[in-house]
Image 1 (spheres, rainbow, N blue to C red):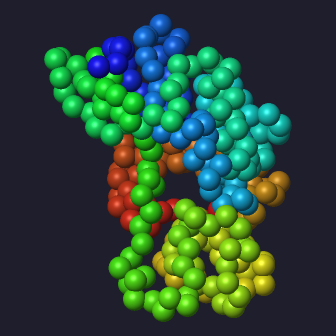
Image 2: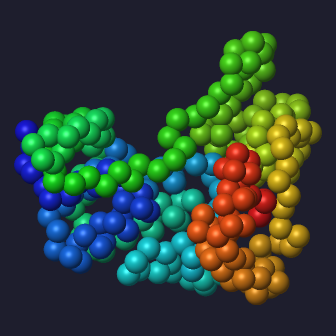
Length: 245
């Protein structure tokens, strides 16, 4: 068995790094396991034009802010580089390229099985994040092989699309972003999905800079599981997401 740690953090994304920051400040003996070869690679693997859906001033982790104006919307690659710089600046103990495959209780603590052996820990923080496994409906297998099919996890830019019309299945933020990009590239674009509305103004506008703090306050204080209205809205948000930005 590999050496033992007080705490093992599984995942080197935003949550895992924020946890690591606080563990380091408290002098805890810990390690962060990240399956990718570099911190931030998950963000770098998204489509090229992706931008975050919240301004930079709301995307920072403890102890380090984004460079540049706080009202701008960083790109996915900028987010990936920010996370990598955050880990380097904090000198956080991270093992990249190490995938955790199983956690089991053992001897009053835990044994974390990884691609490079087993690590003992008194406690484990699981920070792997959502959207790890692409979902493709069964009907996709029945489509003609002449129809090019690309899941959003493999989509990077419009030149991957075949000539002609494009059907985008899914009308949350990923689907809407990709549909807009396909349309701008000259494809007749059809979107299949349930619309949940959208903000009635551009998030890049001056009006948005005034309204965003109010929306953030509402989201963090009113629309939570601690309030009656938040609990009432939770099933709808979980099934279909919130309004598009």
